[in-house]
Image (cartoon, rainbow, N blue to C red; front, side, top):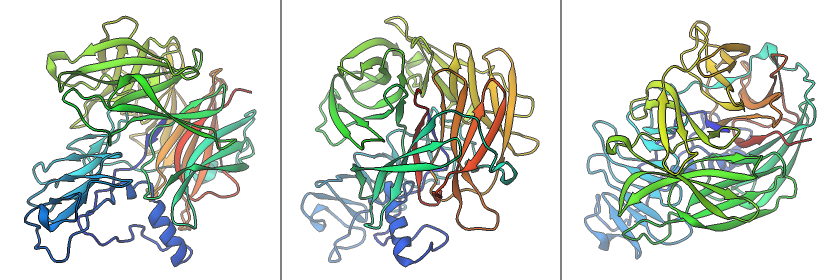
Length: 485
């Protein structure tokens, strides 16, 4: 699973791009590369381009170029590789949201209108007003997770290697998805995936890992497709091979619209995923499907309707049970206000789904919430969460309505600028956990990527910077997995 680490940048309301990194890195040329490659900024850099001859704000569509629209004071383009839509804000000025990556969150109170990625919802909490219902970020914005310096360099007995996926900037000014294999001695080798290039930057999202085949998957609706009265946006399914660099893109049949949750099930070689269910154009619940990754056959498993016609986010999940009959949503019951931490459990074993949000999640005495979650077996989970007393990040093995055992600690340090999500994965045999984190150097501007390895049975935690260095200032984690040996 992958978990966004930082609050989401607000889209700019001026057509003049500005360097958002606090430090010019290496040289001017490299800083320009970082500007183009910043995975957590550029997805919102789709600001419109005003016509200099038009009044500000633009008064009507005639002020804007053909195939674009006036959006308060900017012009949003409607064609091309990155079509945009207007997000109106008469008070603060309009902005343009990239259709494929983001959606509009309207003006609410003192918070200006803004764009959030499709895999987040508009919310009231945090600096940027975007929340992932399946990731319980702190209400006031997250603090970076970093490896404690004294723990760096300890060797692990972990067999095999950890497969990572990163968005890495290039000297050409774009970003390329890169497969990264890291062994127990923290040495790594890279393979670029040239067909997956992000010219405008892209926010890292969830990529699922298949430990049997060692490939990654991601899926999303095609938000640029024509909308009908009954929404039926096609779903795009992508496969990335981090070793051969092969990439396939396929359109699914049998399911449509926004993919709200997904997780890979290794035993059946299938992806369990969910979409919003509709009555006409009204969202009424969620549909849960299985996707055979070999045949691309989509099978409806279960349908769940909102309780009291209110979205309870039952379909936003990143984890499933070993028997693929239950999905888990770690997060807040009240997503919009980030209140009441717990675990949403959806039973999809029958045609009619059942959802229950459990507040009695097992926590150590000084931990108030978990930030990550991986399923070890039927009733055992592995998570990381902050200690209330020391601020250190605690690695915890826990059971629902059972015990919680601390396996080790990491530290809270300053935020990395563009590191992206925390990548966390558990091996298929349930013996190992691996994670990519930001190693914050107190005396350096160049934070580096570190790998943490947890021996679940022994209860030990080891970590080290991966070598050659990868800079967490520019290299964003997109996925992690532990291939079968």
